[in-house]
Image 1 (cartoon, helix red, strand yellow):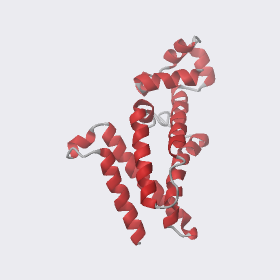
Image 2: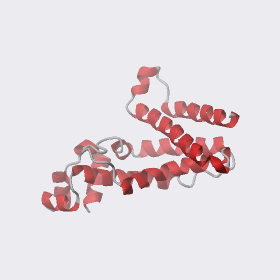
Image 3: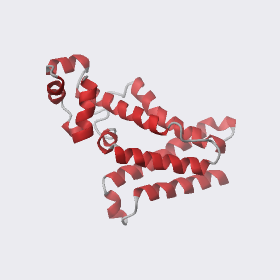
Image 4: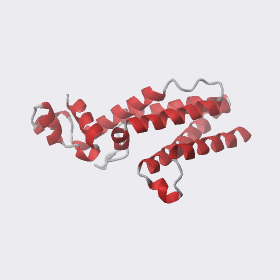
Length: 185
């Protein structure tokens, strides 16, 4: 109940509106109960972020078909931006308050984060030999971190200051250029 209430707060008002008091009030429990369930607000926030990552993974996991790499990536790009547009507050929440308490992120959370990257790795697999798994993984992370960075700038309207370019189109350009470079190596 607490996680669902926290997720509703983030969906409607953003991560900055998330407080233990708000969640407790919404579910009819005391603030102490929330802190019995979660060590602190960062832990609660991390669980909301994990749900968002799960939803993103579910949204993109079946996209790569493995036939034409560029087509798979362009489809992934479209699905990614579609997810961002449909979930602006929850998606935006994954960028804030991660590890704010100074503790390393827990293993269960890092496993969640790895899932969307595994989809990107799967889509890149045809461009690499079997013995190139490490460079394939590195390439997948590099490419998708670039796409994610463009998406973040686009969501913050920062791209306007950089010539008014469309984030989705910039991400497509990055993908096609990156993949062309990989194919020529």
